Image: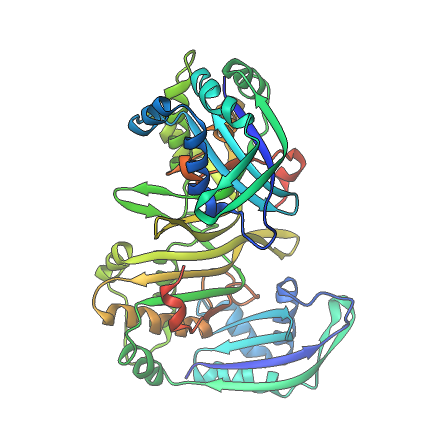
Length: 252
Length: 252
């Protein structure tokens, strides 16, 4: 059921369209969808969507993902029909150049990654500022436990057929998910005049032990491409990608 | 007593002269100094010198530091008199363009940094691959405790007038040295056919509490410019700099 809408955008070349405008895009999203559903999202603790924006060599791309059928109909549908995107706050209009929808089934995810793979390396890229809050403090540097614990919670909220949480799994992660490489920096995510401490970049883990353990974590990582990870994934933080390069696994 | 010799070098433009040749330069150093003293260094557990090389926009620079008078006389003296540097292993001769010696006294360090400062931010740059070994495993990402524990040990080995180690200080570090920013990547240091997992980059901490606590850690950090930090500082790892930018403290 998870689905992603990717919109390639073109804006005023003199303006920035990176993660800084994440909260403006949440505003655009809320304005485009049914008001009652928007209120419901606002009040609920469920993270049924995530969104982030990237600006790079390939242009500006807005990625909106949903985790259930209702969010798909009520969020992706109206957003995919937008003619353009109006950032009223800065009086700018963004043209939509391309629209793509990617959709998977939780069963597909399980079959593809949990049953089949076996690569012990998991390589993640945080493509928008990502942060975790632990006992009231921001955690500027993630541990495998923080990342996967967050993904497990999100997965279990939405998957009907399978639940992953298990205390022993968290202990397994502590002892067997080994940091083998990273390239990260801290960064601030601007939100309503406050700067939230966060990080961006890539990280690579090796999962020791039976391949099923790497597979379950890889399944969670691919789920994380839809759910986002960490705090404030609704306003542009925690955008996550799995880097698919088996051959890169042995290096570094 | 700590002192540093910096040699600006010029080599074959087609060759690399970065941290990769750290162990070759240890060979150069051992060849230049008195044989008996070289044996003594080899057998001793004291880290009375550190050295690393950097290659950047400002050229190639070899930095050799010593922590006591004997090492100053027996290492820096002969190295400062070298006509050129022969990397026999790769049949290359490096010209010496500039020689600088910087010398301080432990009392100067204490007066300059422990008694006077008061900036709560400590900003460090690891200019050559740096690594810690904890219970047999490489620690690819440093904690404040790892960094300062290592510097405390090194300081206490060489300082005659003052000792810093105190169990309560380590606990203080755990609770009050807060990571506020970083930009780091993992990197491998090549040594005799093996690649040692390490990291390079910069990290910034804020020290909570009385300014004396920040000052003692800053003193250690400046000492670290001479001693190096972490493992294998004799063969080019663990080169460290304190970034002096008070105004940068509030940002990021």
